[in-house]
Length: 148
Image 1 (cartoon, rainbow, N blue to C red):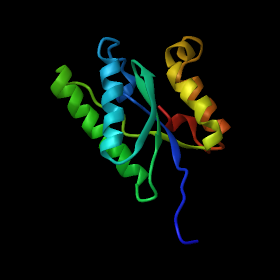
Image 2: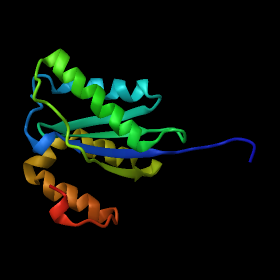
Image 3: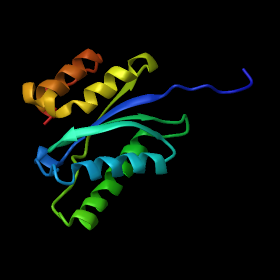
């Protein structure tokens, strides 16, 4: 084939250190915008960013040349620095791990809606319930004692 064609979409989830509710609703929209801007700076495409006080969800399009672990590292580092400098909340940090799930193009609208409705979703289900459900739905093997 003379050219390359890709459809690489990822649903990324990561939480604050120890799932502390550090993301204040007053500056949450600014953080979400900053996360999307960071994805753009990394030559990715932010398709949706959302979350609540203790975690975020990003739907992103990436290139074949991206290394997923490096993208997550750079997003977390830049956004932590932003919170420290712009918000002045120095205890803020992200948990080391993350969830990353591939998303087919046909499912992008559904995942975007899910991310946009995080506050409503977590009014009914805890982060743990939702995350474990997503792991099971995606066929990811895990040991629950190592999730938290």
